[in-house]
Amino acid sequence: MNFSGLYAATLTPFNLDETINHDDLASLVKFNCESGLDGLYVGGSTAEAFLCSTEERIQTLELTAEAATADMTLIAHVGDISTKKSEILARAAGAMPYQAISAVTPFYYPVAFNELKKHYSDVIQAAGKPMIVYNFPAFAGMNLSGEQINELLNIDGVVALKQTSANLYQMEQVTRQNPEKTIFNGFDEILASGLVAGANGGIGSTYNIQAQRMIDIQAAIFTNNAQQATALQREANVLIDALVGTGVIPGLKYVLKQKGIIQNEHCRRPLNVVTDEHKATLNALIEAGVC
Ligand code: HMN
Image 1 (spheres, rainbow, N blue to C red):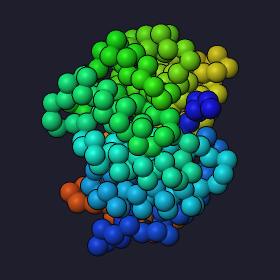
Image 2: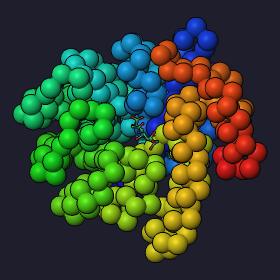
Image 3: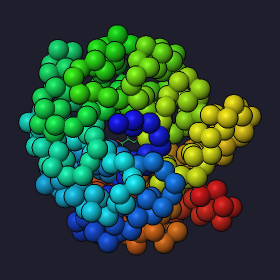
Image 4: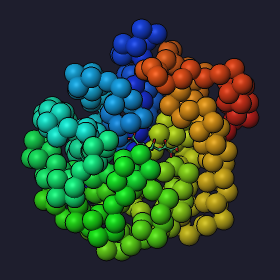
């Protein structure tokens, strides 16, 4: 199966008491399924996965798969710092209608590269589904070299990489050296540049509120319209700058609530609520039709 394309990294809506709001989750999934995107990346950091219990993460995967339409490609993020927990999540996702799994590299404890490879192999075996490995040097505490990324891509069952890095030279090298794999751009801020460097898809949190713009950026790059792609990326980044100022996840939930897609904007503590000042910035962008 070819996994290339654009995927929204989904959010988990919570009630004020921090329990999962099922109606909001279903509504957000439906909204994303009608957005023209190719699929959903479910249960990643955008979904506040590391603030949820394993049971809640499995429940989120279940609820999303139930609400999604059959035309969407579904990727379940099952990453955790513990291989055992990742295996539990992978086994659960393996029994659901997900086409692939993905896992962030284990963080906090220093992990040797051979341990990392074994971690990925064990998780792949538990799911029995293709794996999208994840390079995120800024937060994962691991700065993989190009050679190490190539080695991960050669593990049995690995079909793709989510490259959340601003290193576009490495993006070009990895895409050139692995033409048969899907390489996803992970920073929405550089989707146009990542695609020029050879990425054949993107996974992003802000696709939840600017799907059409991301689709248009991809179309502009694929039709050699660099000027158009730059203009669209600049529009996207005005919004992303505001979200980064707010806190990306609380900011996205605030916008989705203002637009009536979800009714509850709460996050899991310690994530912030949006301040009045940031609300005003986001309201102005909504009024201007930016999102
Ligand atoms: C996830 O696991 O949900 C992803 O990491 C989603 C995605 O790649 C986001 N990355 C991070 O949050 C680190 C981006 O969409 C990101 O939110 C965006 O580029 C704004 O910085």
